[in-house]
Amino acid sequence: MDENRDLQARRHEDNAATLRGLAAKLDQHAESVEMIRPTVAALELSRSKLATWASVGFAVAVLAGWVVESGVKWTVAWILSHFQ
Image (cartoon, rainbow, N blue to C red; front, side, top):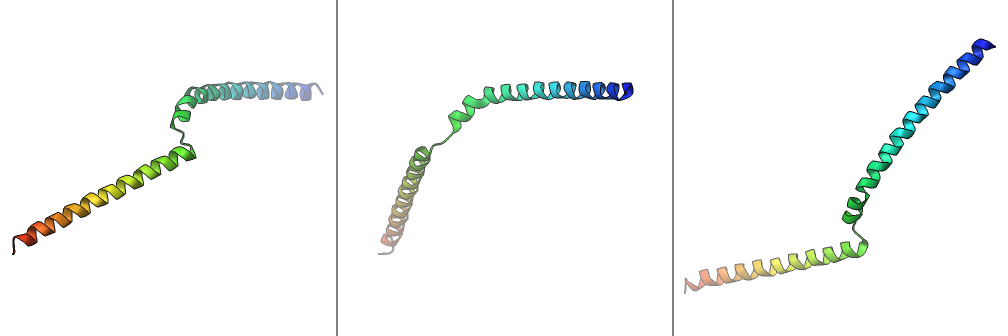
């Protein structure tokens, strides 16, 4: 009985030490998460922001297409005018 009680006491001490170590690691992790939380919140995109950026990107692509198209048309007209 005494030997079993000693084994149980050692096991309890080992488990308690392990749990204290895990609790310290969890606290450390929680502190690091709290430290980066503002940065993550600043980078977060809402649906409305994402839709706005998509609309702006689409408008830029359309405008760039118009510029390229007009440039090609002007170049072709300039080249063809030299053959007349």
